[in-house]
Length: 455
Image 1 (cartoon, rainbow, N blue to C red):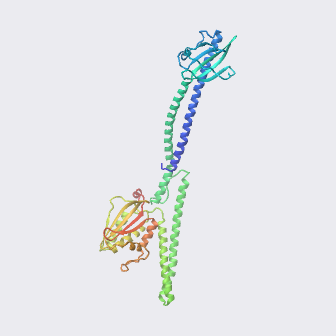
Image 2 (image 1 turned 135 degrees about the vertical axis):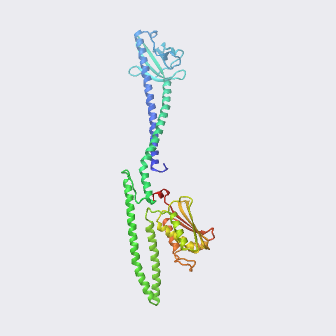
Image 3 (image 1 turned 90 degrees about the horizontal axis):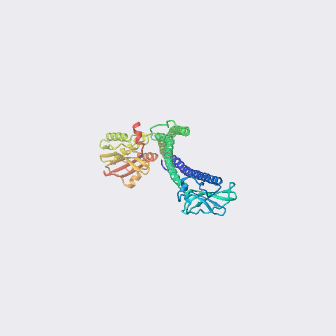
């Protein structure tokens, strides 16, 4: 799950709440367990107090040997479990074996409606105790019965329970976190499938978004398909309008040129000159509109290896005195993401120029070039001709510029190539070749390698 993704956001949000819930659950369980043990201890002590009070009332003598408790903890020294009987002046009458040699600290506070007082005290050994005291009257005397229980043992049990509870809750939290990650990943699968379907359209593997999606994102898939249909309709209308405009303008301009050409005088010369400019401008902008409309179509891709091999064979036959060598790539290359006719126009112009200017040899190579914008298709065309200087390399990319009027051509080829390259988001560079002539490097966007097997 990448940072910033919906799945990651869902995971961290659920994980955060899960941690808070488990920590709160751990403290709540510990508190409930502590209260339960403390209540149990208090009830046990009250039972012992009532047992001693009953024995005192039965015997009438607080010093009687019949007054005792069967719990063996009251017979173990320093156990924290003690009992004693005092009179109102604090005189000791009876005590448990565990209390021998130990003085219990006095209690303070007001007794409850049953004549009992409770407190938490420490004995001489630092053991924390829960203390319950009750007043018993055996006429004419009043006695205080005190029973203590070891509270330190309870606190130790609570601490052990807390540690074990957090270990168990931690393990549960890990399992729930894993489940949350799995749920988030599975919940995002339809979005991943939709993304793959859109990528398939962009790479030319499909003409529309296909598949069945949950109702939450099904409208998105439908809107994407509608957008693709609308885009195709707009492009088709633009093509028709460009064609209509071409036919509508070319005929009047041709008439003007013919009439001006058949006449003499300053006016005819001006009309002829301006009509030539209009014809050039119309041709330029119509070409650009045609290129923009053609390359705006989503879902086209071309096997550049096949196209370049075919163009190399054609140019080798057309230019009989030039040897065109196509170096077959060693590895499987990604396809060009665009129209096959556009690739032929770009590569054909470049290869034709290389053959015209070479001294008999042209090399063509294909490779992948990984740059800042991702993997690009690199077409390299080397010739052993005279080459170009840096200034001349910039000039020849301008529309209609030719450095040698003797070589046949209009001078528009490289400019058309440059416009197509710009429309596709590629790049065109003219450099010095290792063969001594010109090296042309054409970089173009690529389609996914995985889509090639489906074509």
